[in-house]
Length: 154
Image (tube, rainbow, N blue to C red):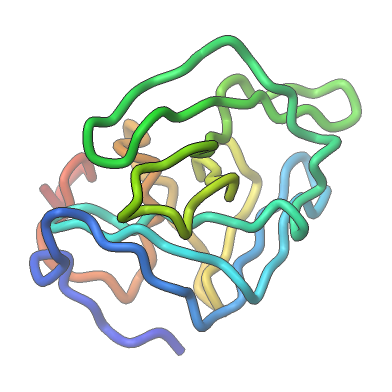
């Protein structure tokens, strides 16, 4: 069981934390990521973004695309389509290949937009896809407070 967390208590600037719970992700009925070594990025008012180490992802399901973004805090992000059995979710995942020093723990780890997945879990809790995918946050029932970008919650 995950502890209750108020997103208003999360830090700013964002902070990376090791995740003490199993993380899983499925796409089109296929398990694509499963780890006990995840990282999460937390920031005031936002749902956590969860990152999987590449060794715990079916990397053959990720196709690098030309889309990139740059965050002045975390660095350059590159994006991937997710492709399984000919079915594609565009720009469904991203990573920081060379993050700024403060976010080094995220180097080459992959985050998935929950809206692109059939299911995702943090521990035993099912992830609720965040409307609008703001920062790829994964909303779980243990979160309280005003979450930016979630209908009815912020």
